[in-house]
View 1 (cartoon, rainbow, N blue to C red):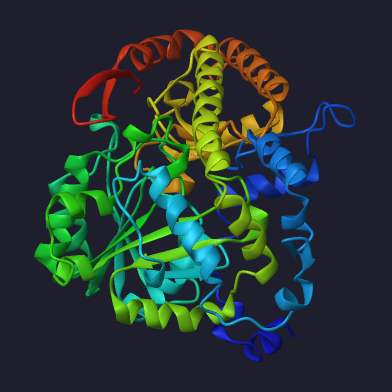
View 2: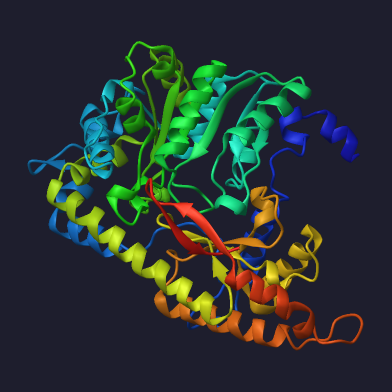
Length: 478
């Protein structure tokens, strides 16, 4: 009966390529069954697998209270409800597109500017990334992505497009930076699989690493795509989460510094994805964008955007908000300050539990090294530890294997979606677990503390080097 029903549906409906069975999504499902609440369910699972920015809602709510006309769909005191309620062209409201590109430039320290005519609005970054893949590649072709990467890309980029992802394997030996050999190896792997490579996609700042890409890495990528005659997609939805504006370098800035002609091929093959989900903490508003200097890509993506438009009401409200330069200047600075403080609090709590992480300078999460807690250096041991953390410690975090990390024992831990009190509780639970874990007998009856102590000391004393700028500084990690 089930087989008959499946035959009546499309391949997309029946083929298991969505990625919903990833541990990344399974952790969410377990959280939803038993969510922590500070009053009603204090023993529930604390959500630390959700990259949401909830630290500056007070700034936005204060602005809304002072500017009631924006949310009431009024302009100069007069209602524009009917105007916004009627059909809108899918190119988007000009006032909003202008406000959005100005905000993008402001986040980047006004080192680069953006032309609203090259901007395509989409219903979030998920829609933007998929639309770009539809524009750049055909089914059976491939894009290269450095590991570890956001688990949702397996869904966003592959499920409906039929495009394959080939990983660029990065390691902790250099802080997971992209290297020339890693790029070439990924390209050669695609060729071995008879996959035509159409582009490279990177997230900058990185999800899940919580680090910004260096100028050297960006120059390396631009040289690589220029040499191969392929595209570069830079997903910059976390650009406003960098702890200082100077620590984030957009690929558009590097293009400008290379003095690339705007009609050159490489200029036409670089595309930026942006969203207000992370920087402003508005994932529910579903506001994303594609920025491209390629007129054909802009035209095609604009047509595709009709399948996922941003509502006129949302555009009107955010146009008024982002046009207030006093608000945006204060918000950007305060957001960076609060994120840095909250990240520091998480790192401190982890250190008290004997756990280190890659030094981050952006994002809503830390890339945490728990390899010293593994029974063995395997992904099976990583999943065993992850299950203990979810079911016993009652924290939902994302295992590195769900991000395609090639080294067992790394986890993404989010910090901006919960209160300080809840973060403190999460660290208390984790510290208690680690203390107990070292005294639990293993299968031979011996205490794990004697077996793991050497690995633990090694993990806490090794240094990882990661560039925040063009100079290097020692970073405690794996």
